[in-house]
Image 1 (cartoon, rainbow, N blue to C red):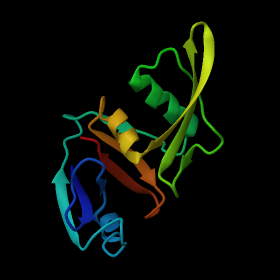
Image 2: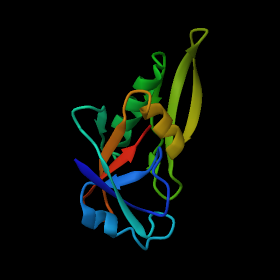
Image 3: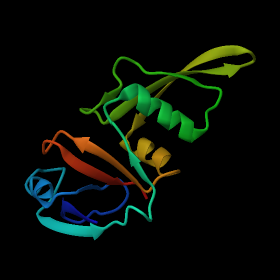
Image 4: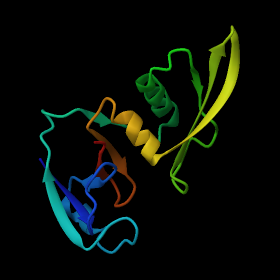
Length: 142
């Protein structure tokens, strides 16, 4: 399967790719998010580990992150903020058991933190983005 990316140079972990060429073209003159050149990569969905995720379903996403981290003693709760696109942050609040008492902890995870957690188990994360509308976005995790 061919994926497309508008970029000036970066293709490493965290780079976003579109399934449709027209979606990548929308990023050609989008400063900070794309670039002039359209490049392609080939992905064989049968030979890599893909996470299909609803980025905007905060509760489900928090459980996924914590399960991958192996934080078995944590009871996850999300703040009302959840994922904040403006700041690129995801808030995970949880209580851990320490000496038979729950202690509150709040972790602010930025996109790189989230990518590092997901990369422990997956090669690509795929979600439907809002720009361009209904763009199937593939994020390289490794």
